[in-house]
Structure formats: structure tokens, C-alpha cells
Image (cartoon, rainbow, N blue to C red):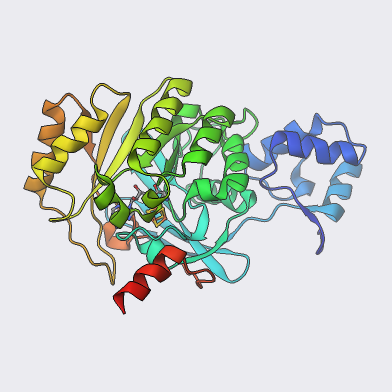
Length: 365
Ligand code: SAH
Ligand code: SF4
């Protein structure tokens, strides 16, 4: 067994693993063999990697490790949604959610412990920020879910899609999220196609541009309001990157990957759900590579909003449809186990209070 100081291999991209092996005088092609064991077969014990030589296996056992996050608890919803609370280093915990649907299974993956961006309707934001997850902790969520779901290489995979929509803002942790997504796409990793991996962002424009060049997976953007005054209030990062700048970056991104951007819009009763705002939203997105995903607000303890009524959501959706926009309403899944969008809380000890949060708290005094 490898001891402290062992190098962590989980989360290394193929290039990084080849580089590390090369620096130890080992042929780079062994990286592909090892990745098949780790990501396709879920093996975390070097001794079980039987197509590697005995010498290499014992060398790896002494110098390297493959450490998965520990499972603290698992909850299963009446609708089949599963949520795992995972222990990560530093006494913190994050959540991962599996959503089964006919013909596909989506894993909702966390990228940070907490989130600094402090959107006013989000349980994760309300907790503040603790730290970024490592690429190993991000890809480890797929491995653990795969193991818990009893996935076998030979049978159809339970996880067919991944959404970076769990706790945290993935583009605020670019350095670790992109290598983890490369492993999701890699032929020797999870072999998912680009259109089955979706990153959701609240709108970090510079990182969106970079992502378009470096790893253009499907993109979802949390818009939530069609004008800057309202969006400033709901998604405070809008004060830095307002709507016009955000949409420019979206159309640029869509131009690079040739696909539609999904705009997420949380339905908050009496706040952003009027017919006038629906028409304004349609005006921004009409005739663009855009589709809209309406998300009924999911309540959480201490939250200040209510979910829009079904009839209001339907009326909002009808206006968008009439304006020619592809729109669907996301059905809340797993809300009986607090696994729905925006309910993920994990366990976060806030180390950094967002300046925006401090400003708002100060203003309220
Ligand atoms: N930080 C990223 C991804 C994680 S949040 C982002 O903000 O896009 C995933 C989605 O859930 C986002 O669209 C977010 O706005 C939405 N969301 C957050 N809190 C919610 C809540 N309480 N009810 C419904 N959706 C929520
Ligand atoms: Fe962070 Fe996304 Fe929640 Fe906003 S909605 S606080 S960006 S996790």
C-alpha cells in the first residue's frame, strides 16, 4: 500500500499520466492500460492490474495512489433519484446526484465545496465557499456512482450523461474541472461524447471563451432574468459580466461547437415570472442558437422565494413557444431527498465570504 507522499493518479489526464510514467522511465503506453482499469473497470488496486508487469505494479503500489472520496450516506428518492454525500479532504462533504430516466441516466456532479457567487435563490451559495475540488475528487464522483450503480463494462452503462450542475461554479474551478471533463471524454476514460457532457455556468465570461477553445462540451447558462437590474439581484456576478457581454460570449461559443446553448431560468413566484419578462426574454434569444430550460424553484430551509405556480410556468412557456423558442420545463427530481437543483448543501465551513455577500449583509444593517 502506498503511504503518505504518494502521488495521486486519480484525475490525471492521459497526457499527465504519460508524462509522469515517462519521468520514471516507464513506457507511456502503460497509461492507457492503467486508465482502462481505473475508469472503465473501476479498479483502485494496482495489484489487480494484471496486464502490467509485476515490477511496475509493485513500483506503483509504493509510489502512487488511487484515492476515491468516501461515501458518508446514500439516499434514494421515491422517483428513483439517488444522492450521495461524499467526504472530501479537510472534513468537508459534497453531493452527487444520479437521475434515471427512460433510455438515459444523468449524473449531476459537484465542482466546489460551496460557492462564492452567492446567487440569491441557491442553497449552495447561501453556505459560502470553502474550496475547489481537485480533478480526482470530481472524476471520483463518476467512479463512485458507477460502483454504487453496479455498472459493468460489458453491460450498458447506467451513466450516459454528465451535468456539471452540482455544488459550485465549475468555471471558477477551471484548472480542475477541465482535466476531469477530459477524462469523461477520453476513449480510455468514460468515453462520453461532447454532447453528453454539459457544463452549467452562472456566466464567467473569460472562462467561457477559454472553454470554447479548449474543451467545448455542451454549455448551459444560468440566465434567470432578461434585464440587468433584476439579474444583478438574482445572480450577482452579473454586475461584473452583464447580459449583453454574456450573450456575446454565448453566441461565440455556439459558433465554435455548432450547437445550441441551453439557457436556464429558475421560476420564482412574483419575481421573474411575468408575461412581460417572458416577452423580453424571447426578444433576447429569438433567432439565436438558444433553447430555454425553465426550472421550477426548489425550496430549501432559510430560502426567501417561492416556486411559481404551474399555471404561471405554463403561461411563461407558452409565450416563449409562440415566439419560436424551444422551451421545456425541468421536472423537479429527488426533491423528497433534497437532491433537486439548488438544494445541494453538503457540509461546508465557510472560509471565504463573498465581497458581494458582505456588501449585501452590510446594506441590510
Ligand atoms: N454554478 C452553476 C452550476 C450549479 S447550479 C450555475 O449556477 O449554473 C445548477 C442550476 O441550478 C443553475 O441553473 C442554478 O441557477 C439552478 N438553481 C440554483 N438554485 C436553485 C433552486 N433553489 N431551485 C432551482 N434551481 C436552482
Ligand atoms: Fe454558485 Fe451556481 Fe448556486 Fe449561483 S446558482 S450560488 S453560481 S452554485
